[in-house]
Image 1: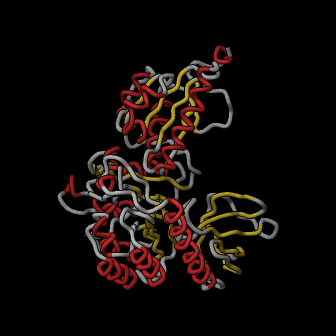
Image 2: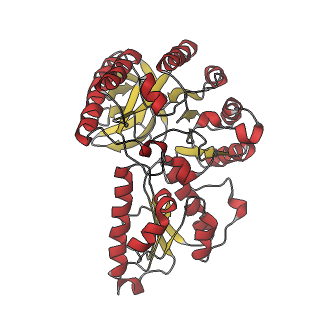
Length: 437
């Protein structure tokens, strides 16, 4: 059997889903390293004897990817290719009982907050002194910083509270220490994540305290960019914008999932805001920080969405002209509020509507990018690929947003470093530039 020739403590961690899951995997990675395990993250080598899959359970497509991955490694275990298979994360939290029956070859299942139990199963100690320490799996120059867990919002379509529980903020001093630790290891960009950044502090400090947190993080030596992702629009704390204007290392970027552009659909989604209030909020944000890049996410085909309500969303996108935009088709999730409604928009129509929004956004993005030609921007370079050095401006988050491409035949830049780039050309989702400093 192949497993007999492998190291007994060789572990490979597989991460599926969002950046919040990635942070969880990095914490597991750090704990195992401290326990002298030979551990890798998504290694391409087929040499691990223990596989740990950190799953996503958010929507149908993500759940299917998680199940397919589990089944692939279950087959490997039955074939003697690996010795142990453990599953953790959101899918495991939500469907543990069913999954145990359906896939009995998995050695053990763990929920989203069961890191100590997972370590104990591996005969590893949970090292409390490592709280605030983290080995990252992203390129060294950027890292995600999860400032809170869970969510208290009642959105009709969302299963996150079922899998992640209530909102729990991380203490400010712990987050600042984590930022210092990351900066000491070469991290230059912190990407703040939570299910809802704007709720930060309400449980610990009895007030929304994100503005104070980002001010303290901006004082950490070595951190040159701080980026905000996943801000909820209802009750948005405007103090954030004042800190953003005052601190040069806080990116003029905000990821605010709005979900729809129809007041009736927002009511049905239980978002606690109207289209009119949303538009007023966006106008106020842009008035206070004129150069800010706004990213949003929408949902097509929520139960009850009529053609007229979809047209309202289409018109909303056309009017607001978001810098960045993504859209999901609605996924009918059991135990959510919306699951009590009939999922009455056909899958083909959901996709057609999503495609129409993305076609509209492609045109908007192309027009906005054309205006960047001739401008100069500070760009952080992530990788080299297909003859180009590829980086991002402060207006772009890794993997989901626009990129800046520099011809490697004409210019040289160090990966993980900043360079001043003059934009020479643009397409719908990419900028092309020359190094000028």
